[in-house]
Length: 74
Image 1 (cartoon, rainbow, N blue to C red):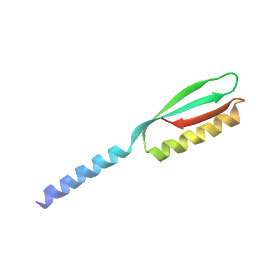
Image 2 (cartoon, rainbow, N blue to C red; image 1 turned 45 degrees about the vertical axis):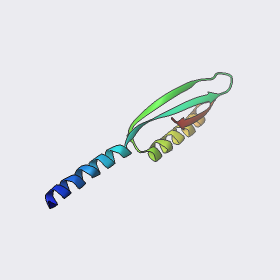
Image 3 (tube, helix red, strand yellow; image 1 turned 30 degrees about the vertical axis):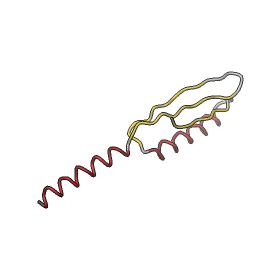
């Protein structure tokens, strides 16, 4: 009985960890006369990690481009 319980707990833990890692899309759009938009797909990430990467990418685009980009998670 204990072995079955341990196996079920192990399987439940694996399923729980897999459900935390999902696919997110960072959608970026420029504001201004030359409007451009694009999306970046991020796989096997947690939501907070995807938000952080998307925010950091928007900052990078703002410093390297003349266009003002805004990015967000879809």
